[in-house]
Amino acid sequence: MNMADLKRQARATYSTQKGLMILLVLIEIVVLSALSTTVIGALLALPITVGSSYAFINLAREKPSELGDLVVSLRGKSYFNHVVQLFLRGLYLFLWSLLLIVPAIIKYYSYFLTPYILADDAEEANPITRSRELMDGHKLQLFGLQLSFIGWHILGALTLGILTILFVQPYYRQTMANYYESIKTNH
Image (cartoon, rainbow, N blue to C red; front, side):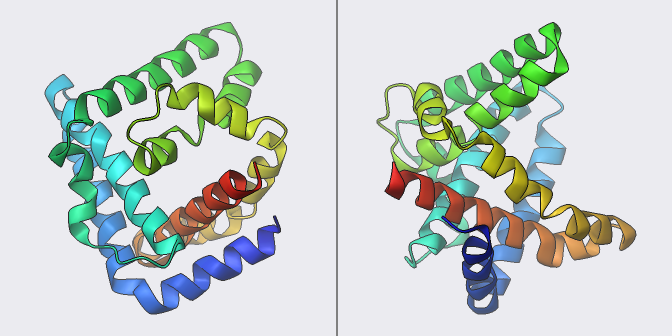
């Protein structure tokens, strides 16, 4: 898996699906910002992360995607599982961060694919463990891929978030969905 190819594919998807990708990111940001401040809000917001991952995975597979994909978790019987798994992932990361920062960072990369796994296979018994298995030996690679976006994130910050919403986040999210597809295919 070549980072340049993953990013090239993401830019190609962006060029054809720009409007949808921007709306997906904008709605996700607004919903997560507005709802995640309360427990009830977090219960509604966590599945939006899975829905967004679902939409970007569909785009990576060149399948139709729509704004309704954001609430795919809320429509099915997998809602409770998605909330529990994402809560557990957050709890595990919090507990690892109590030890030291470096173990928490390593575990962040181990658990990174959890929302993508939940979006791709709602019946997966333990998506956190599956994420750890998929990321075994790939954490440094993902770190490098994410680090390659640092310039874009700085530019996004300099434009007060406008560039972040209009390009950086859609491009980043699509690249991460492409990364998941690549890891899953090669594993």
